Amino acid sequence: MNIIGVIAEYNPFHLGHLYQINKIKERYPDSIIIAIISTNFTERGEISILNKWDKTKICLEYNIDLVIELPTLYGTQSADMFAYAAINILNSLHIDTLVFGTETDNIDDLVKLANIQLNSKLYDELVKKYLDTGINYPTAQSKALKDITNINIDKPNDLLALSYIKEIIKNDYKITPISIKRTNDYHSKIVESNIINASLIRKLIIQNEDVSKYVPELTLKYINKNISIDNAYKYLLYTIINNKDHLNEYLSVDEGIENRLIKQITSSNSWEELVMNIKTKRYTYNKINRMLIHILLGIKKTDNNKDIYIRILGFNTKGRNYLNKIKKNITIPIFTSYKPNKVNSLDIEYKSTYIYSLITNDLSLIKKEYQNKPIIKK
Image (cartoon, rainbow, N blue to C red; front, side, top):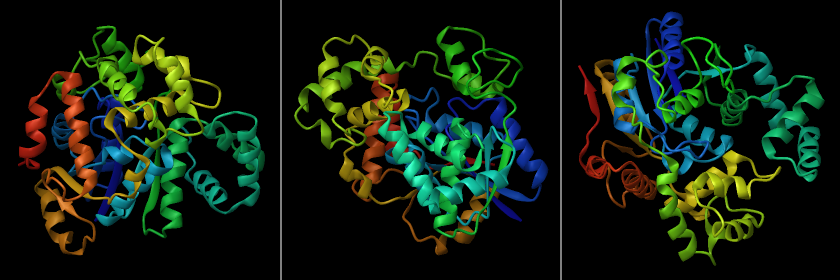
């Protein structure tokens, strides 16, 4: 029996995600699927339009056996740190296979490129050379790999896959990476089939368009159509103004970008406008969004020293039986609900949920953070 790991944001869970799960079940009919999911905010620095409890219900409904929380501390960082936490947690749960979606359909190329990133001095030199021209890190990575191998890897899911594979290789985890080719373009802005990317679905939701063709019925039930990151802007302003002399202490505030932030804060009327006013060739849209999320949530650079944990959000009978079987061999803390001060990363999760509840005008989520036990699907 294979133990399959899936890393996902499900923002929102759509038919492409269901396609991936069905493919896993088709390839590995006798398997357990463990999904580690982002919670309130995502790797791109966006707000989730599904809360984590609704995501968990959807996961269990569509044949995921065990659902685990990806701590906000790591779920809102760039690809390598995102991958570090997700793979570490999944390895602690003894997965033997990691399945992810990619634009490329050649896992051997991805493994080759990951090894180059880990072991090639030439690669490091080329990345530095490109960074010195003022371009951003993901682009520098892609250009360096293209120079060495003539393989072009520049799509977000492929770059994230490289981070997963690097984490597996450098830690010698006994995990086999498996890619499933995406059926649509990650950046596509037009509807070409009933499987479209999550960004386009979010855009359609903002425009108050019908997305019932592109998401499962249960997702449609739980989508919060009124969520906007701009609802968080006043809380962000308050935090920046009260900490303007200490902004460089926050995670992702690097290279003097706090000076641009202070300069632009008084002339920006929304979150989006602030991002665009700060954005340069060097600072990507996603990097700035992540930085603002870290300031909003009060996440400091020193928080990266906090412990990783396993927070169980839900399971079915197979998932519960598997967890009970391996629990005594798990070496990192396991939680089924929020325990103040037990692990500092959990306190960040609570703070994240509190801010998320204010943004979404759903204060019941604060109580759920304390009271909810794992969701059980019979």
